[in-house]
Amino acid sequence: MIEQYITDLRHVDAAVRYEAAQKLGSSSDPRALLPLIEALPDRNEKVQYAAFSSLIKLGDPAAAAPMISLLLSDLQSRVWALMKLNIGMRLRHGLLDLVPRGDEIILHRVTTALVSGGLDHYQRAFFVRLLGKAGHGEQVTTLVEMLTHEVSQVREAAAEALGWIGDARAYDALYPLLGNDSEQLREVGIEALGRLGDVRAVAPIISALKDTSEWVRRASAVALGELGDRRAIDPLSEAMHDEDEMVQDAAFEALKKFSSGHYTTVL
Image (cartoon, rainbow, N blue to C red; front, side):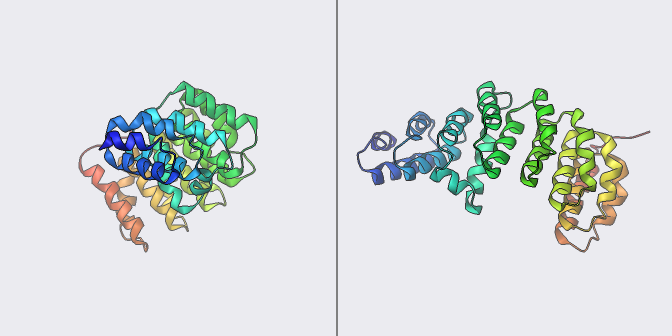
C-alpha cells in the first residue's frame, strides 16, 4: 500500500496528493521519508502542509534541513501562517525536536536568515530557537546579543536558545533576567539557567520560588531539580505547600530527583 501512496504523491489531483502525504505520515515507514521531502515544494499549499506535518510524524532528523528550506523559500506561506497559530504548536515543537546538534548546513541557513532581514518578529524568534537547537559554543555570543533585542519575543527565544546550548559562558548574561519586569523573561531565564548546570544559579533560583508569578515559581522548582544541589531540598519542601497546584507538582517532581541520590554537595 505504501508504494501506492508514494505514487499518488505525483498525482495530477492535489486532493489525491494531499491524502497520500497524510497517509505516508501515519505509516511510520522510513520509505516515506524521501518522497515526503520531495513533496515539500508542491505547488499546492495544502500538500506542502501535509508533507511538512507528516515528516514531523516520521521523526527523522534528515528532514529538518529541507523543512527549513521550505520555510525560507516563502516567508508568507500557508505553512508559516499555520505555525503562528496555537494549533501550530506541534509543527513548531516538532521541527525544533528534529534539528540535529551541530548541523552546519542548518546553522548556515538559519544564521544567514537572521542577518539578511525580511523576517517578522515571530519568524525571527523561531529561527533564534532553531539556532539554539542546532548550535554550540560558537553561537553563544550571537544569542547573548539578542538578549537585548527590542522585541521581548526575540529576547525570550534567545534565553531559551542559550539554555539549550548549555554553555556556562551564558550565565552572566542570563542572570539579570531573574530581576526583569517581564514574567515571561524571568521564567525562560530561570529555565535556561537550570539547563546550564552552574551552581551559582542555585541561590537566586531558590529566591525565585517566592516570585509573584506561579509560572516563574514552577520554573524555579523544575530548574532546582535539574541543578541537583541539596541546598534546594528545604525550599522545595516548602514549595510543596504553594498555593498553586502546578508549583506543588513541580516541587514534588524535583524532590523525587534528590531521593534517588543524584545531587551535588557545595562545601
